[in-house]
Length: 294
Image 1 (cartoon, one colour):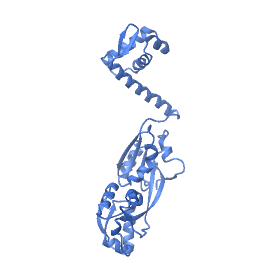
Image 2 (cartoon, helix red, strand yellow):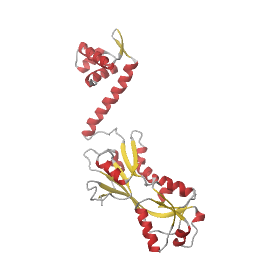
Image 3 (cartoon, one colour):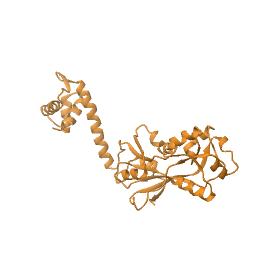
């Protein structure tokens, strides 16, 4: 047998009123009918919810637990009604998917308005672009952060909002960047590259144009690891500056003076929804460039 929510609602009213007579009046029930409903709920739960002393009702330990659950249950119900009516603020967390190679610093900047709101919740998932976009299509995610818009043929219903565009450079310890030319730097110093990405494509095109074979220290699919390897002087990182913003600001790392003519873009991808999460308007809506997946 499932819980009878009518009984739970009656119990909530009695618990908050602390008086059976007043609660019965508010619910437009007789006292005897209301008392019967409460006893049926107690029988279903297997615990007394009130200590009765004359007309005084005091919650038992089980009663306090039941009231806490009842308040949360009916608050969620109220929020559901308000949300579907277009006037509610969803209490559900914002579900964000992020490409595993995406800069953590960029993610933090994008999500800062939500993180600063004590009433907002957040669930952050990382993975590859295809699995994240499939989850977005299935409405399991509210937004996906990528460095490229989704292919139109595979995801025709999704919308990519371009958030920012940043040049890519070579970053490392200053003493290891002192070279006469870009070609000399690429062939003399080990490089840390992201896995399959627009940066990697641009880098491969660059080295082909220069006719050089670079030294590759590591190919990494996690930008947090790129930061650690660069700080540990394992190699020179090929990234936008935002990835290493803290290290560059503190003087731990520097940027090479050679332009690469490689740019990385950042996109927030959404799915058309009748009831989008209200936090999305703050993050994506208003002033962002929208484009269908290409």
